[in-house]
Image (cartoon, rainbow, N blue to C red; front, side, top):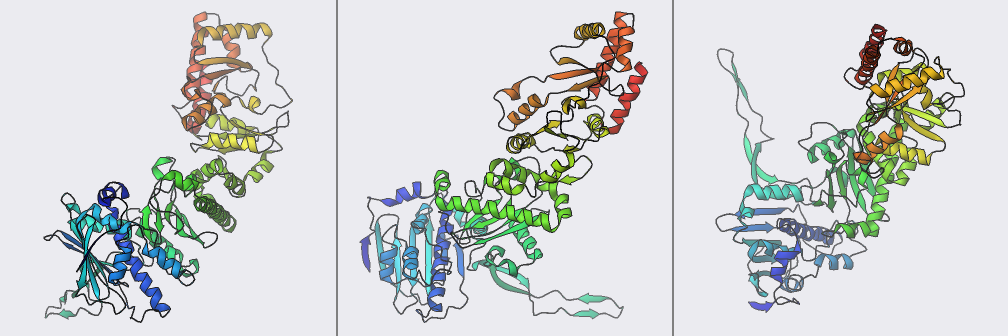
Length: 635
């Protein structure tokens, strides 16, 4: 038996490991299983190139709990270690065997899937164990070795009678860490971190129906049929899927395979994904994965942290900000890349060159997929627009390259259910909706029912009205107005329609200047000035006599402030509206010609109440008809 001290540069590294190596103690299981996977994949590679003469077979990794003995066992059937290799790889802390192996076999090990880069991974065992044993037998003829360490720099290394190739790590669980002796807790960690590891992981056994057994059915004298119970057999409980969909070629997968994998990733998600994007690139970086577009809501925060990040099938995190462009963090799925460093800070990730390239690649790939879906089946794309628009609009705002690509597939729906690309939209409205100054005015509504009367006024003039109702649409319009030439957006209730798109022809007012002055003074006495700015306008006599509007600029700035951005402080300003009074409506003439002042005020207040009512108490066509009838009654 040999004794010695671990080669460390500080007096006792183990307290440091427990405190600083990883933020979560549970990571130890991921690290140890990753090392076991490395050892198995190394053996596979060595047997494939003839450097190891053993039979590779169908190895697995086994996890066993000895609750009574307070021990946790991790057993692999990989290439094992000699006593000299234990001395080298275990006792020289931070010396990664996987890295040395990859360097030695860099020309032939490219596709071997070895995880590597775990460095101090083995020593994470001491975060939860007071003593750790390694019993290992090399794939060579060298004798087995048994290493023991109790969490101090002192260790023992002696011969072992182990005869089977591979390594068994025994963790003597520390006081206070007994949760890692519970089957439910270990199963939870295996499912979280090792669900898609490339080597089968056994955790106990389970009973299943014997596939070779056919139950017999018998019929008694009364003709009643009885089927014997299915025969049960005991099999290994393999908790992982070693060959997940993202590791396969897209040509080998059907649409149902992608849906099935989505259900595997999100067993509690009952809605099918809208479509998927398969990522597969090996230059200038390595990246595989599958991203899914789920049905979206307008709540941007509810959707996040659903993409899982892996490194060679080892789960790392489901917080992918800095790796996936922010607008795509609302998607779901898996990204796997050996080029993304593990266990480093967010700021490091965001500054990493490989990560920046990965982010750009994912943006381009998503844009290309969306364009392909739009081109191949526009009708289906239009049906899905409401479920995906929030991601696309967010991308157009946050990623310049995505904004440029989205020009060909971003849609602008109308209140009548038509869908335009931006080019189609401008071609459709250019002739009628260009104002006297040559600027094209794109009209939109955010709520078909609440803004029904305003929409009808615009449609009566042959104008097209878009339906733009996402929470970030104000930001998007601002972006389009500054990027595209000579256009502006105006919501249909921002002013009366002739002011929204000013033409050369002007409507003559029926009122004289004196009558206008009298009307203005009367209105200012009755209408609360802290809420309304009175605006006298000569409009068609058929247009509403009183109309409440909110200026586009102020309302849009408030909306932008509420969703981040816009002019500072606008979001906290009180709501201010314009009260547009149609001087050509018969009711206005009636108000002026009414003798008693209280009757004048009653007519104004009734009209104002009706205009207020149009802001939301009744909706749609019912509201429009109600207002028309009510004004007729007032007259």
